[in-house]
Image (cartoon, rainbow, N blue to C red):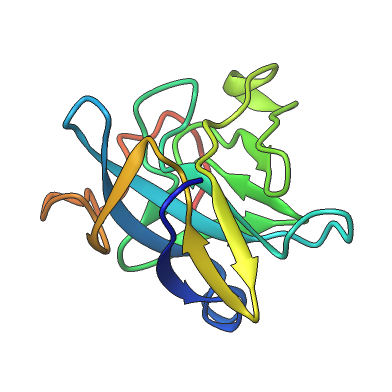
Length: 144
């Protein structure tokens, strides 16, 4: 059984739209994980994904603006690919046909817990201070 670590509340994720934390993976690498609301009644109300687009090494959640969510999807700020928030699947843009890397969590009593044995919680927020908050080196016309 995985060790549980309380991350935040479902209400916090739903109110903010997303919530970012840093964890250390099995290989000793610091990895950003983004929590996003999920509106699928058959799934928990929050899902956790590694904070990287599958097409290019691009953060989906940025410290000052959070993750851009549109119609139940997480929008990549670089090329506009949209990942379904509940499944991580992408069927549009440059990342079409891929899926975000999931991180195991549990939701109980309105609280979100990290339960993935491959990750150890380090801190809330980005992995480092170079969050690229000024935006991606975009090749699209998207503006957020």
